[in-house]
Image (cartoon, rainbow, N blue to C red; front, side, top):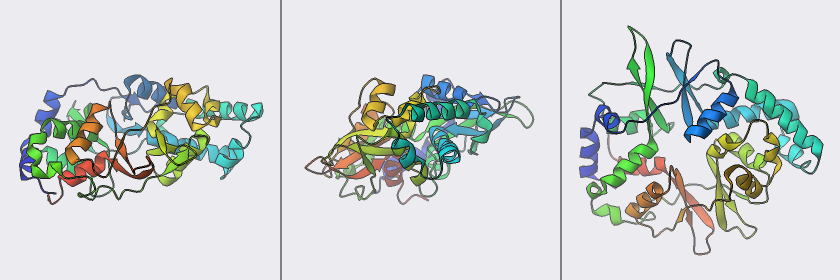
Length: 324
């Protein structure tokens, strides 16, 4: 799919102008903050990643929900062995297992975020030459090792940079929706015609322990798993973001089924958002932006069984196809 009008728009719209039009308060942590502090900020701000600074406010990197899941995986392996997902889950009826997980959770949450920080590119505020097309290609790296957001920093001294803004893939997809008139005739093509139905989808039954689901996310580097019933029909979604809703003192909740865990931490079991192979590209955009902070939709067949998944990255990659 080629969209000359949209590409021209993304080339003309600068990062500097975009952040001036989309001001938002930015939360941050210092390297001395604990993982429990990270849980709190991610939960309260309803965000997936938070920038981390040193004690002087200098930007050093970021901590995301995926970082937490991978670090928790390492901690679980250290405490229960490489097959912890099966071994601990098999003890889910025993009080000892709940207590053991709670103990691990409390210790894990007391560690500092410094050990979790991943290096994230720093983009400079006030650089009038950087375009949104450049952000998509070189910031999100949609054609390579994908980043889901960039942090923009402002100069606070001769060589000191403080984080001031964040721009996410979700922000840009929302912008695409607002300017959907620039997508051209191909916007009415179906996701199948555009080749967007080939993404591999991983699912887990609703009765499986939440611990097992997060284990798969950590090992397979996934941000979500589809939740299906015994017949294989899609009924929900468990995301890496759900880990931020887990109170550090209640890690025993990980022993509950995926369905029970969702209810315990979110108050209800939330249905997954899905489309079909016949959904048009513009309908796909609408589905993504009409649900708050949605990062993916599942493609289902006529029996509502998941056959693929379409992410924000897939959308952005399609829009900039052919761009250099």
